Image (cartoon, rainbow, N blue to C red; front, top):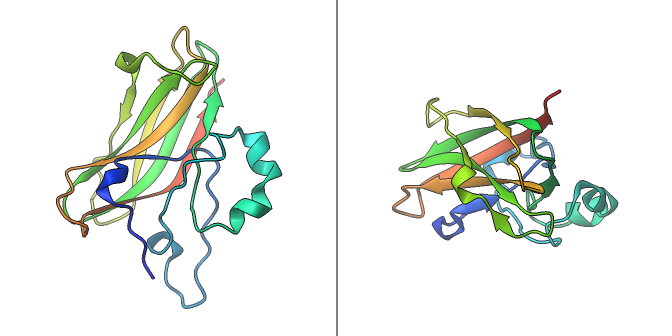
Length: 164
């Protein structure tokens, strides 16, 4: 069974901790089968996610929202792959929150786009720097321009690496 994320979830949120997809028993690529992103676990940090990993693996979701602690001036590389079906486009938005979780500095959002072929897994890649007054970095996976339920954006292998 294929699950499709509806357009109403325009700003799909996921982050660093995504689980590797092993091929299904029937040989079908899991990337095309399980594509629901859960928001919840109170936007847990990586420690809480690891403590609850066994419980999370029982759920039908591929990811969760994770707000990562970031200090002003720190630099990170953000990477993911995406595949499109039908109309539309996909991008990554890196957005900022205060240490208490309030959204801040929207004018400083960083957008990452992909110019690879739509019908194949193609890489989105970019570098970001945490601005002053920010306490958390949040990766938002977005889709736009879909006009029907058959227009889909898939994401996989979302990564965040701190630069020295």
